[in-house]
Image 1 (cartoon, rainbow, N blue to C red):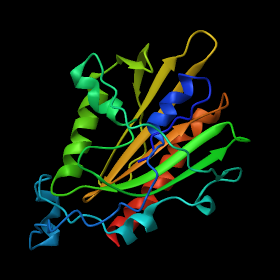
Image 2 (cartoon, rainbow, N blue to C red):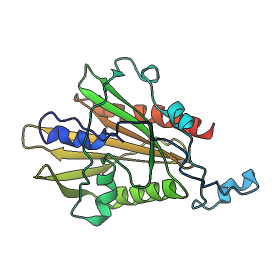
Image 3 (cartoon, rainbow, N blue to C red):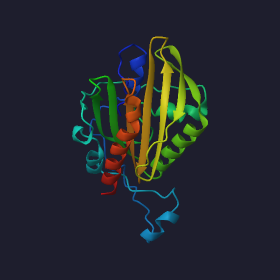
Length: 242
């Protein structure tokens, strides 16, 4: 996956190497022979246990569900993929680790599918959309741990390239897409002159997860996160069902 936050102002854009990095390398696929354990009556879906295994997404579904420039508001353009790192960033509060993991290049247990990067606001804002698939109940488990961490964590500390950093967490009222959605804004002070906020919204449909990472580059751009997350999540959910 492509966790990148771009390396620009040293530590600041290191986090984007954290959030937008995966070089999609076509690793998407069928996560093995885990077949969905579907109940007979679709009408009883509301009563189905969330833990029931869902069928992993195909590569075609993941490609169909990822954003393209044509889906985005005017002013957004494709951005070249940049390499990131594979480091795992440990935090001081174990219950907050799932939020740090949202910024990692890889998500444990996930098969990484299609991913696209974009720039907007004259290049100041960054957006990455990535689709992944999990075997068994992995997608449900991932969303549960993310939601629990978003509820419990107000801040956590980690270290980026040897520099200690405190990351403040704000739970986002993200618009729902698919079966469930969670969003957080992760903010960090990069030393007086620089501050950085990374908005992450994840949505689940069946065994698939959409991850949107958005870094606003202008004062009012942060208000766009819900609009962008809704566009991405709805496209993903439709493809995942199709």
